[in-house]
Length: 379
Image 1 (cartoon, rainbow, N blue to C red):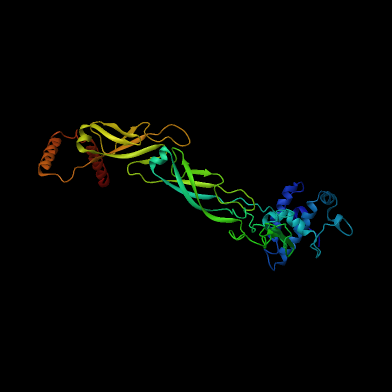
Image 2 (image 1 turned 180 degrees about the vertical axis):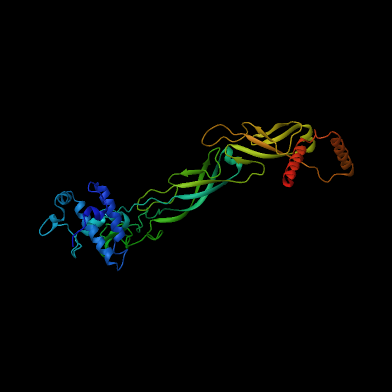
């Protein structure tokens, strides 16, 4: 039975670059791998065919010979494609080169580093609006891991030392045979450290780390907002085997304010005013984060009107101009009227009616809209 063209097997053009050939081999070998296709003889045959094609096309000398003479160059005493033929020798090298990153070997020789950076931590800091806007300092406490002071993070009892792991001979990794594959794995005894503790430290039980409650002072810059984070480098959990500590991220949570709502650099508030002030106009005192200021309310102000006080907002922590304060007025309707007040209001209402629609332009506009709507429904 004649063999398929190696380029066709890998699905690449004859002039394909080495990287494209390797990428195609990776994809197709994973597709037809026997472990992924148990009891599928066709997949196994395709897998061997793909491997044979790659061994030729990934070698510059073999590829040049194949391009010139085709399959005949590797038959009956030729160079040899290095196919399976019941022999898996040399396959682990090709596997480590192409699939090492998938299974953890990474094509490395002599093990991997056993130094690990400590984990990052997150702390939620609750602030008032005033603290967030003006800046403040806060003392926080949180549980974390730290280097054991008794053994200085070594894990061994003082006066003793760690020993080379007998399982991996200090490499930190061992090889396991899985079918055709030789897989490099973390040593189960030393967990990748390459050394073991025979006489563990009593305070940390050989881990080199202890749990503790850490207390820190955090400076909160002015202008921080909900969700902002303050990074404290090296204040996270301790690293392992001499690795650096992680970082602590303090995440800002701003409490709800009874008067103001913040929107970026701007502040918003609602100001109740009396019916008489809305109708006649007047001066109001409104609060800001810097104290009270006067707000002029013109005559005829309607409920919901918004007044802008420039520069009375927040200066953002990342720079920029100070925001504004927006005051939305809410006309308050009087309640629990006395008989005398009710009569005065009735008299006032009568006087408004005699003036026609000029005193209530919005009501008249709304009434006209209702008439047009109802007329449209009946037409």
